[in-house]
Image (cartoon, rainbow over all chains, first blue to last red):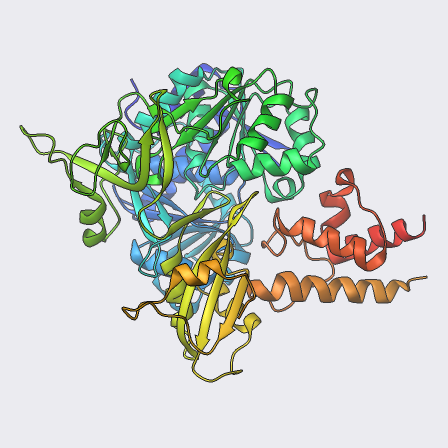
Length: 522
Length: 86
């Protein structure tokens, strides 16, 4: 029985050595090659001093080397940290410092984008592309010098960390969700059973690797001995190309945020013929508008559709298998019921279990739930709390911050957030993180960041900014200032400048008033 | 009749002002792959196409919104010139 993620690879490499494991940009790698390359990388990392629990960053565009790197780090006993290849240097530098990354797998272009301060903290960079320089910048070809037949001996148990995923943090800095092998395996094993992933399956990987949706694509592929087809940016941006890719590669299982599926529906020229290979379509990360879900169901008659729900801290904790016969009359899509080996319950603001008709915050307990945030005890204590419903021993539960109700059909329904976190294209965004970025500008006096609902991407981001001196700051200047501090999907698309923000009677920024006014009103 | 040089200048100016600069990217070459560093993403591509349609009075079908046709400023210019000759 597997208790570590890399054991899925070891098992499948024995069973299907010559079978393609990973495909990207027309190239593929077999299970044997993936096993051997990741063994070599693991030996290399051990030689560079990586010990059990040490963090290794991955900072390069999605490619076959991404998957080799994830597995190589795990086999070395390390913890991998996927970094958004498009994130600004300041944010990448913060994460590298926050979790103490000393060894970074990157390419020469991405390495050159790092600040000198960040570079000075790195002991070694391994380049997936580009020439090595000396003993601390090493070319990928150097891995051939290391043993391929077996991984280094490292004693690991299921509660050891496997990876850290950074998400938006309300206090202005991203926070690292620590995921153990057991956390990930609980999810992967549930998926394997529920979706019956088999070796003949061809999974797509649409989500970026720093986004938790990719965990299913990668590890359920390895678990089943299937093949994963990585959707790189040359495909992801172009809906008709993406539709042709699904058809040409005969993808059988698709998983993405709903907005990616909506763009396919709106501009991909989808036909039932193009989607005929798809037996399962999974989506998560944001609310799927019913209008588009009905269109998707129409064009993918042969597919089973699933709405998966869960913050990164729990992988996925509830799911709803779409009942096609209910689609015509259904007004809102449920988030469903708890996954196997996961317990969910909703709690009132008074801390009591919500009654059947009552709204409450969704709490989750089980082996899929994170131990908390890297080097942030305060935030961890706030979100991963003692389960006071358990009287006989100590146990923890995670507060999702999502308000839910239970419907007549027994399913949970998402009603909203209890804080100012929003979703855009499935990305979690703390509006406070953007406000902090704006407020750090010396010319900014006050800033409020608001979500403007959008049918396709969920939310667009609008900022209202009061400056110290009228006319001293331009919209573009503020956008560029944000671009150096937050990921691209968090840069306010709309910025209104004004002399002062409206206030409530208690002197707080009147967000209700701001949200009610037309965009560009100031 | 649109002059080739003018077309490219307009496209470059639009991409730079609307997409690149707002993301903190201050310059781009005519050969640079615009999707690679996130200058243009899955939503941006449709804003770009709407601009091309309005600015150059051409019609770009969904099936023409591909990497080959729109990957760089050079590629976009080729597409616009080819379309406006029809």
